[in-house]
Image (cartoon, rainbow, N blue to C red; front, side):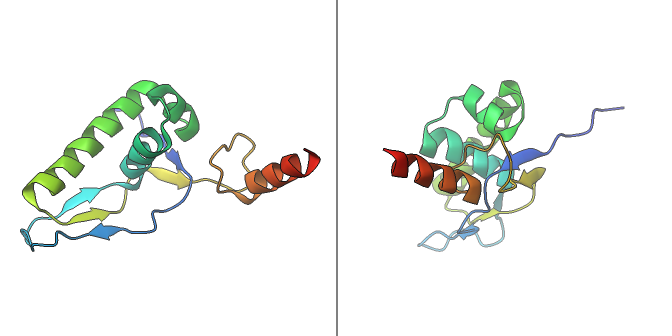
Length: 122
């Protein structure tokens, strides 16, 4: 019996969940990027974390991050190169709780409050 999938920690849902090519594209085929794949792309490519740091942040192993990241990049490449619509939905994830002690996302209320207090003491 396979091991159950572990939920990946995600800071917040994406602001935009669908992207359409300007020149139309194949409306019959849509690329679906899961929320955890989106988060791996965001953390590695946008924020600049290593795969190990990303794994720690998402509460999963580095090898799992590598697999998620590889699949996500393939899906984004398919959407860009073939002019396909892209949707972000589903996946095995758990939204970050604002009270999480190991949260380093920068968007949580607790983390913003800490930064404000640190700036005030400078």
